[in-house]
Image 1 (cartoon, rainbow, N blue to C red):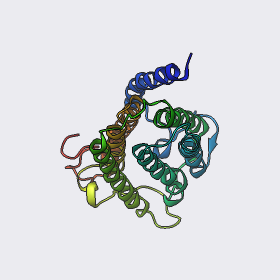
Image 2 (cartoon, rainbow, N blue to C red):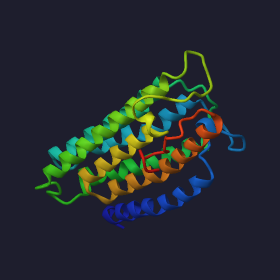
Image 3 (cartoon, rainbow, N blue to C red):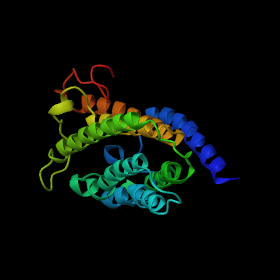
Length: 252
């Protein structure tokens, strides 16, 4: 089987499995963070777990870019820069910025995240730098720039929401508090909302099946977790703001 056929089939497999993940996570929250629980086997320190899970999205993607068999177009270069902006932050900044005072992360969760990120980085990087048709971005500069702008808006929302969460705990403090300010006024999970906007923008700019599969996976993972977070906040804090929605302001 040629790499093009393998690449296509893997992208469609990611799309299919995303639907299963979406349904499962509505009933069984992924066992990390506040939902960590016994019965999931060996565990890792949570900071190390984040670094290991997210690192393929940096190093494998960067390797595909560096080993591109053809000249990298400005549009493909811009998309690579956006991707690495997100994942350098996610793998090497976010784990040390957040006050992760919760339980360690099950090794099986780390393994699943690592495997997903390997496949996802391969799908998107190889399409951008080796397998996409010649001139795939020709005449589509406006769409690429619009998608890139949307990505940066989402990245900013995600970054600022995480910053709010990081400031909730004093050094050495554990436990959870109600976040306030900015988009927390309207939704429980603006960090997830921002990430959905990021990868939606990326999918618009890339206009590829791998990028579509990624944003669908992002929604399949984050929408159920946002719903679970929202219900947890309401059950835990009697004074939790009733006007807040889970993920989308004024909608859901």
